[in-house]
Image 1 (cartoon, rainbow, N blue to C red):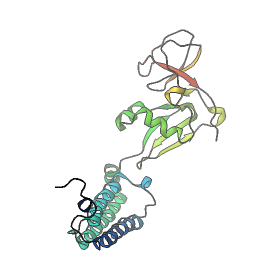
Image 2: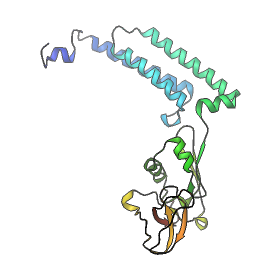
Image 3: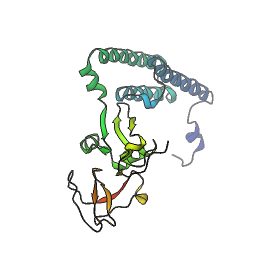
Image 4: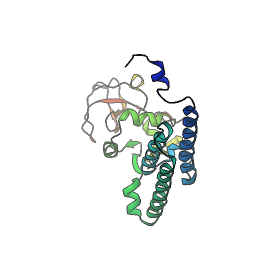
Length: 230
């Protein structure tokens, strides 16, 4: 084998006309995936459930093969599309008639914030890191958890938030990046402080240490109480 053999690297033994076939195969693969999303009624990837995402990946793998390999015929890929579409229709029928089947297949919405405090067990069970969780909140205009009355993780991965009114906002744990969220064991000043592990907030006097009654943690951050700017 010759290194940097441009003929082998660019086209190998295929004729130049094969590039036109590749373009046609790629168009075929694109239409297959597009039609699946169109027929299934989904408008975007964010709306896909776990089951639908697995089907899209399966179809995408088959579509990728037919795009580049000359020995992969088109009709079997069309059969893959038909099979997955029928499977999707049967699954929709099953989930609409059986709540247990729907919960098993797609999961259930999970409460992750309640009364300005996040549900530690829910986050541990979902295997969500604090950084990922806080980033999602920041993208929805949240500065601290005391602004949030209720937060629900939907089955499609989106987070639905319900906010306190301005007069009901309570002190809460900051969701800002670490450089904007100081932490300490010895409180620098008297006031409301939030546990950095479970977000429990309580009043602590200056130059005092405290153990969180909710999780036993002893590291704190200033509890913010600013209203949410819409």
